[in-house]
Image (cartoon, rainbow, N blue to C red; front, side):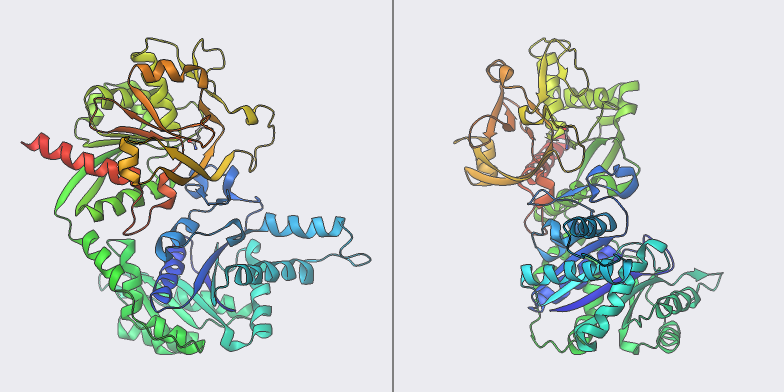
Length: 536
Ligand code: GLN
């Protein structure tokens, strides 16, 4: 197994995740068997209990792992399906070591950061290599070099360098090269300082990826190469991009995959970015445009609903369509006429969520989409609230609600899953991960998926109350996707509406370039038809 370690310097938010994903993408395109993992140096065991305001969306894996959103980028850029093993947090590492100590594993020894924590970190990394069978494991270290939290991880990586041998481990350091003054001079000093910091910890970077407004000038590249002691060909520009999907092409054009493979002595000559370029060409040159309104709670942060935006972009690319987003705060809709916010929308998407804030605004938006035949997709909470809206306004059960928001409602159309009733702990206790869904023959969902049996990822505690299903279906909202035992409602579609669908699961997590999520594809396709009709 060989390792590429990606660290970050100067400041956070430099796109380390996109850099790591893009390295994975270009190596994979060359035929290298590569995988990626993320280290988050916080104490939480996983991202499941984090507010999306803090770290963006929680990305759900097939095995039910609740992960940092970078795992989503790895999966999308490398067309991979990863597991919880690919996420390491300080909490997980310490948890493992403390567990081993209680088991008597280190009997008689003082348990310490070095060597016990660092050994655990190394063994968790090599475990990923062994289990995945990958030749190269990309390890992205979250945070910025110099953070107290990152120290044990960097120390483990320093040890890995001497244990694995130079040829088998490589350090990529991402930094910022700001431009200053009216001359827009590119400043390399912050990069020099952060490399010095890294060297102080015993790590010499092999590659510098410099985030910059425009590609690095020759003089800046030469300066970085000289002061940071890296070959000129290993100083790579990562200029601002219109689309994140351009980054692999940028890296490829600068010869990074060749350098990486030469440095690690990997020899699989194959240029496979052809497919990626085809996809990117569609992203960059759309023929049509649709506007999709996303109604949620954390709208000023792109990261909070990242997988939805990406899934819609994937769907758009397949349909030669640019999807622009109308990002709406559900609470604002509560204060005014929904038409005011949604008049321009060719489609409406209500994503997943927790807690009552904004729920009524989302219900208003759903009503608007249903009544005005605007294409609509409800995901997880969006699926549940569409059931509430339909029960209230079509079945005339005026106080219908989810018991998540009103435990005294006389019509609990959404209720807690039976197996969740006695769950008291919050971490990793929801109905999580990939579950099978059986789709009804002849349904719209069947046409969209082209199959009667699918598997999609879940993350919820509540569900459609089986008690109300017959009544709801009789009025036209049909549950055409169910769990194999028929008990859990998974997909609905509305009779007499061009596209009004919802899923209890999260289709956005499995969307990939050139393989868009079926539900999102359906929404964008319907939105395109809606917008064409509107223009006629
Ligand atoms: N809060 C709802 C539940 O727990 C929906 C969850 C979600 O949208 N991910 O079932």
